[in-house]
Image (tube, rainbow, N blue to C red):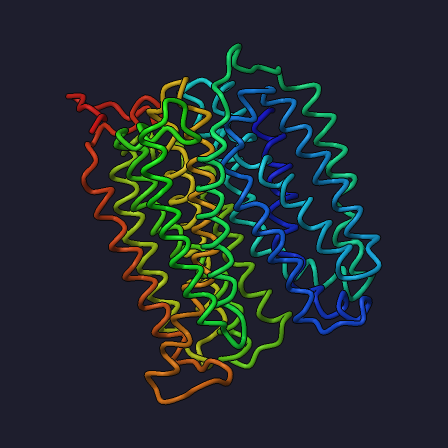
Length: 466
């Protein structure tokens, strides 16, 4: 039940992040500004999440997971109301910042609650419920947002969060037992500044590069700032007795594989929901409704894989499933690049359905394996660290997709203008190659990796420590 509660809250948060894009023109009209100027609201939300997600583990240890999760729901819901009643762009932007703070606490603390109350042999099923919002929201968000904007008002995009938030808050109070550390460590304020600076600079740099036209100068400067902050963060986190992130978790091979190779695969996976609608509309000439109808096949694949995820992992183990499913998923990404405007829609639907199957299995397996060998005392820092990295991969997928499209245009002698079919083809080729390369990290794992969670029995156990 706790997993269902967390899934509901995460769905609200993930959906809000994707549904707003379709409402930008109407919001701009209401505020008497250009639609592109409203993008500052999306940027403000992403920056707030990036900055505050790293402290979620310490906050949960200090005040208790139930208290923090409930407070995050309250903040997110109230901020949604403020977004819905905003009368100008600055009110809207400030409300989005507040909403981002609530969202930053919701994701990692919610997953932390799930893994703390769930026995090891049931974690797979519980984590699977918390994964589906990240898979479903990018697919359902745009068409749902378009329907709300066309038939009601853009304000209902945010006001619909109110009943969802109230329901989640009541369930949180009833279902979750509040636990926290008796003596939480001293807050690592310098670590927060350095890690927050790294995330802020990286997310904003990716946002600037993703704009049209791209701000390459400021984006490049922020990338350099982010790299410098990252180096200082590593130096600091290794030296202090109670760091914001305990980097010792990276010595656990399953967790490390998820953070490195798994992150590269996530970038590839999250690039597809960005590239597909654009390819269908700009490259194939379909309208928004036709494009949305086709991409719903990915959603169907996500759902169809859920019943067989746990049995497959129990039968074959994390390593085997991640390798073979990773290869097959990379194949579907390559196949997406081979699609043409004259490709029959039934064949497109099959390709996208198979892609949805692979995405669901890979994300569920990676997320579950990340918690498989984490000791109880490392759960908070591991959850915050993983959520921070995952947040970067979502933004990284979109930014990398933009770079690939623009790079292809330049290589084909075009500067500016809408991407063409050939640009999307090469982008999907690179995405498929990235997905394959990410599997090299998984290949180094023992066959028994995460067996305590997957239930996969080996004749001979192998150590999971580096």
